[in-house]
Length: 406
Image 1 (cartoon, one colour):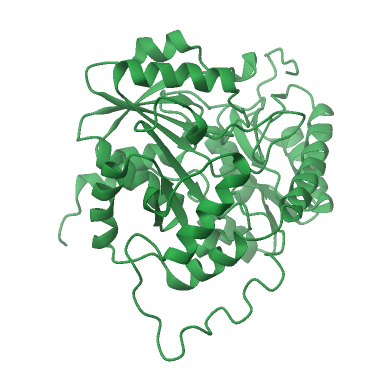
Image 2 (spheres, rainbow, N blue to C red; image 1 turned 90 degrees about the vertical axis):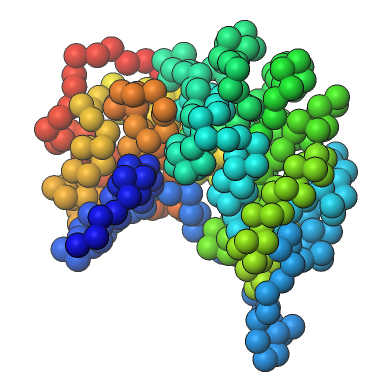
């Protein structure tokens, strides 16, 4: 048999999906698996958003413009105006989801062996995108015991080296739910200007902020217009993850023109998805107000149930729809697998994401999991019933640590 590349053998395994075969085996045994492992909410897509979506394509679906169809680019620019961001169509490229946007951006700003600074825990697939691009992550660790504080500006500056090309953030953060305040963003703006770096900001969860916290778009930062690159997606805003439509927005048009070379190699983003996205981005603000209210209720359910568990530590998320939780377990990968292979409660189990995949620092996340509170209240209650029972029966429980709430 021909040999596979070492590169593919070493490819990062997504913590959201690597246990899906175990989940399917559990389902085949008749166990109901409650999926809190991935950010796929159960909300209906906007009513009527798919009606007649293929009417413009009477005989076939053609390739589109590599940089995205102009109606969608116009709609995205108009959507940003509600955040106080004004950009032109030439300052935005449509991508096949935010994932492609992150990968294309890394490929455009960094060569193999270059470095990107990323506060951790971070969106797990950053590990994979950087690995694919040959880019090294320089991580800035923040602990759950301290409430996942955003690293101070001195820590960012100390991490800058001769091969640093930029700083990558998700705001609001996945998985911790932290939201960057304006002062911190301004400090980062001064830093990237001083060292002539890129500031890459993944803003996929900008609509979901709670408890009086406020989202500040990176594109409103002044004085670093050529440094800021925003990666975005419609997936979470409209519960349309499978549509695979995202965007790269930047006033650095030279960068975008070079990224367009990658866009042309993959020919075009999905045409039907772009038609849907063009409609969705024109929805009234009331749509997202409703979503925020629903997520706030789901968040409250999870927090209440976690408060009733012993030896559990968490920081209440300020944004997005995830909780990163420390549990009294020996190994989060083993625990998440065990939930699917050896455990059930009243015919059900819960699928979570192990915390190890959200770090670049070896050994971190061993007793942490990510919970996505993306299901309606009754299903969340059932999932938490499973988790409570699992923590009472899991053979790898560690009871010698003192835990407190944050």
